[in-house]
Structure formats: C-alpha cells, structure tokens
Amino acid sequence: MAKSILVVKYGCCDNYVFDLCTELNEKGFKVSLLLVHDKPHFRKPVFDENYRKLLVFVDCIYVHLDKDILAFPLQKMCGLLHRLNTNYHWFTVSPLLVAKVKKAIRHRVKDFSSIIIFDQQGLYLAGRAITKSFEKVLYFSLEIYTPENPHMRSGGLRGLVAYELAAIARCKALIIQDELRARALLSADFEKLKDRIIYLPVSVREQQHPEKSGYLFEKYGIPKDKKLLLYYGSLYKGRGVELLLEAFRDYNDPGSVLFFHGYKKDAALPEGDNIRVSSELVNFDEIYKIITSCHIGFAIYPNDDLNNRLTGFSSEKVARYTQCGVPFIALRNESYEKLQREFLCCELMDDFSQLAAAVQKINAAYDTYRTNAFMAFNTYFDFNVASRPLMNFLAAN
Image (cartoon, one colour):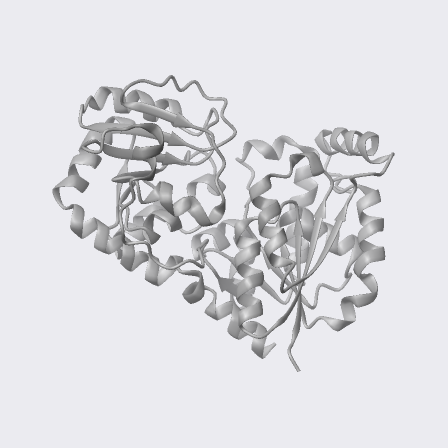
C-alpha cells in the first residue's frame, strides 16, 4: 500500500510546493496538500495556476478566511500583537484559522506516515491544530531568522523562532538547503541533530534549457546584437538594485543592456536605451524564456544577515540560471564561494565597483562558465536528483 504524505503550506502554492507534491506523486506516494491562507487578496494568479494543476492528482484541502466576518478585524489585531516588543507568539496565526484547520484535518492525521511542513508559521499552525508530538513531522526550512535579521525586531517573530527551534528538536527530520544554513539555524544544536538533517537545495523539476531565446529581445524591441545582463527577482529597496544600476552606468558598455525583471517594484529604476524594467508576472513554466534570453545573470543578495547571505543553494534564481547555462554574478560570501569552488559557473564581487571586471572575466571564458553552470544544475539544482535523499527517507520511514 502506498504511503500517505501530508504537505502543509501556510501561504501560496509556490513553485517548490508544486514540485514537491508532483515528485511525491510520481514516486508512488499518496499526497495530500493542506494549503492555508488568511490573506486571500494577496494571492497571485501564477500561484493559483499551480494549485489548479495539483487538483488533478493531489488531494487538496484549502483552508482560508475569505468570507469570515471576523477575519479582517481579527487579522489586524493579530498583526498588532505580533509586532509588540514581546516574545509572545500565540497570535502569529489567526485563532479562526487554527479552528478551521483542526476541523478540516485533525481526524485524518493518523492516516499519514509523514507530514512535511513549510516554514515557521506552518510549523506553529501544525502544533496548534494538527499534531502535538511532531513525531511524524519533517520540517522544511526556507527562511532562517538569526538575531541580526532586521525582522527580529518583531516580538512575535522572536517568539515564533523560539517555538521553531524547540519543535525542530522533536521532529522526525529537518529539510534544509545546505550545511551552512543548517548550522546557522541550529547553532549549538547542530551536532546533536545533524543525523536528522536532509539537504535539499532550492531546485527546479524542469530539465535543462540549452537553447538561447529571443523572448526579451522580441517582446521589448531590444536589438539582437546587444548582450542582456539580467537581474531577475524582487525590485524593491534594500536589495542592491540601485547599486547595481549605478555600477552598470559606470561600466558604460554600449553593447550591453541591463534588464530588471521582477515584482514588488518600489526601487527607483529609470529606463533608458540600455536599461529596461519589467514587473510583468509570468507563469512558472515560462520563466525559462526570460532566463535563456540573457547573456549573464545577477544573483544579488545583501550580506547583512545570514538568511540573505547564505543563498548559494537556497535561491531559485541560481537554480534557474544554472538550468539555462547562464553564468551569473553574486556578492562574495562563503555560500557562493563553495559553489564557485566546485563549479566555476559564477563570478563574485566584494562590492559593486568590481562589476565590470566580473563581466569581462566571464566574457573571456564564456563557454567554460556556461558548461560549468549546466554541471552545477545536474549536481545540485535538478529537483529530480536533489530530492532523492528525501524520497528515500520517506520510503524507509
């Protein structure tokens, strides 16, 4: 009889949820997805499309607060209490949501051999509404919050992180992207828990895309003799996009176009002949058209806290670049240095003044960087390969 797996996600049906459920189904597991949302107006069409696709072969349970009269005022109150300067965490998830999840799933918990739960709020919700023991739980960590993270000013988040660390010690396993992030999350408890860690880099289920695309050139009328340097990701202040723009202007190469493609745009990014900006959302299965249009990519994350810093194996854009054989440029830190040592698929900058040198170095040996990017994908960022330790664990436990 096929083992039954429950996947719990608080929030949208992101690409990694879709890929995980799809892979579990193909490996013969009976999959149920509990998708919980208290902010339905924040849903995005691309995430809804993922959910609709999963409905075909996954038992999907969608718990939300769309039509509850008390939902909005209670959500506001919870948000206020969450931000208070205390370590209290009871209101990080709406009590209405907890009650609805209990009603929807509590009676079925005994049917599942394992429960995979994403991130802190999902873990907390599970502890309140699904299971008290955590003995069936595999906790899937995507975001790590350490004391220097600016979000830790929220008392509610501090309490949630304390709850997270206490719960991990009781879980069947921890799923996390690499050892650097595991050590950052667990700190002194790493040695005690290391035998229960399953490493799974952020990766994609699609195969390599070795062919180059003219998608961005044709869509935005860019001359095809230009080389596109792509920043793909959120376009908001504090992510280094303004510094990248300034460095590109100093680079002053008439043969290159810097293309910003992403969402949440609040950074000042004026367009020009060699600077283009798009906030258009695209379906996940069309992202490769954007990536394969570019010559070099940027994976720019600030080094100010460990969650942003340790992204060499936890960034979807890195997985996308390597999938398409696109060399990329990142800020130097221990995470990207590890990837670069193993596969010379990227160049690293100490600061943005080194942008021109990084671009020139890649251009001088472009085919080598491109080949290494594909090799990195085959080793770390192909979900079919990267997820094998997790699939083997679920089959055996």
